[in-house]
Image (cartoon, rainbow, N blue to C red; front, side):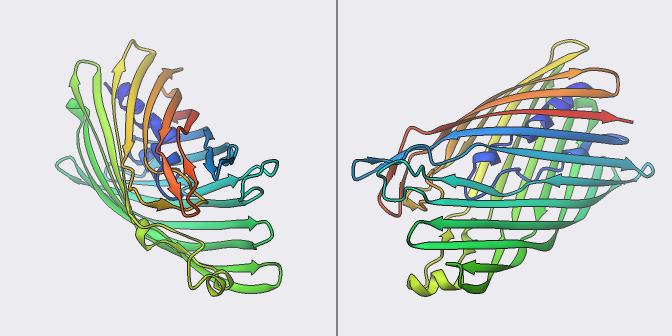
Length: 352
């Protein structure tokens, strides 16, 4: 069952967060801290969305560009009670580009958001199969928006600090684990250039979130696992001063609802070398109008993964995921329907 445990964590490299509400991508997982002893992991994922819409009979073309995700984790066991970890991820992002070679009203519009975070974590086992953990997070954020003939903004790279706290319970004999993690909001004061002439400061708070992760063995060599992630998007707002002044105080990007993302799966140990897993994911469509900078609403996903134990201490995990993106109507009354995304990922992990 020990090797099977890693299969449930394999989907961190293709988290449903990669196409969840708002700008969510990595899901802010800390799976490395669930490993025993010393461990290291490196992951890479690629997501290819197809997001198209119509407005007044005009076709938008595919507005959502492909993107990649990388992640890194390192854990060292200091003694039988204390372990320390370091995690790198890309928690939020956007890569939107309305093709310029169309007659669509927003043709040529682009929007990007790039983030990265380094989190230092300490875990302490308090006994009775219980552990607590806490960490400090350094996060960077940058981006740009261009609406041809109307608006241009460049957001310089900014950094901010936050924290996480959590607790977990494990029962190794049945491969059971339940972990709850709170991630704080992080404030960014971003130097912003609007329309190439106006220099302002834009304050952005990336959202606080709560992750609940769980797994348990249900039969010999069989594991069920899942996660629930809540993100406080209602308190997120990207409101450059110049844009707000020219648009009756409106934000360039904001969200009316918080988001809850669900994922569940079953893992199975096939033999001494191979384990496999299937997952499903879901996020409820909130309804109402969405931003033209993010024209989808909710999703349903299906994933497959396989882990190969290359040696007694190293593993390779491969994963693929199909995401059916929810239909949406944008602020400009465009209709985006029938959209989807395909993701692939690979993770290398080793204990030492």
